Image 1 (cartoon, rainbow, N blue to C red):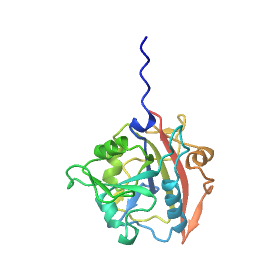
Image 2 (spheres, rainbow, N blue to C red; image 1 turned 90 degrees about the vertical axis):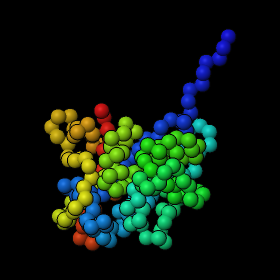
Image 3 (cartoon, one colour; image 1 turned 30 degrees about the vertical axis):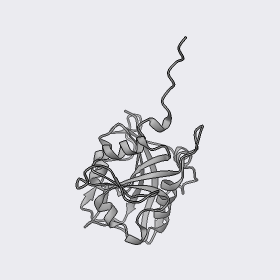
Amino acid sequence: MSNPSPSPSAAMLPPELTLIVAATRTMGIGRSGTLPWTGLKKEMAYFARVTKRLPPPPSGSPPALNAVIMGRKTWDSIPPKFQPLKGRLNIVVSRSHAGSEQETAGEGPVRVDSLEQALAHLKAASNIGRAFVIGGAQIYGAALGLKEARRVLLTRVLSPDFECDTFFPLGLQEEDKAGGQWNGWVKRSKEELDAWTGETVPEGVQEENGTRYEFEMWERVD
């Protein structure tokens, strides 16, 4: 009698994508190629912790790194002394790259010419935990067009009203009156945000240098 075929391991499945972004009430994320706000050190520390923290290990070997996927302009906006972002596999998407090219071991950067190629690289790897898309707008838009995009970790910047020329391509507004959903996305509770990130996320409105913001998690339900 033949043995049943083994189920594919988690490492061989397409990775989920989590988009992580800070945006204004009108979903503005940038101005003149940089962030519209400055001095949000606690918010940036949250970004670093969440993107570095590995998920609970499944059976077998635990993952070694999470991945952060970004466009070339986002990569170029990172000060050279902070390139690559430490403790994470850095993947840079640019149309100028033909094929996958890994410049350095460990944290990368791995340079690819499409988001689909980035996913293929992650699928082939055996040591990647979570995969985060960190910008910019074109990469966010491409990610939202894929079924693998399941979650948005949103820092909602409440005040002041920053002038922006670049916007996150999905309007995540507060829950409407029809079941708490918006465009096929639903805002999760503080407890669900804590459980997914693996930490007690600061609750309610935070303030740094006169800028007020709060942490949210949205998940795709369609």
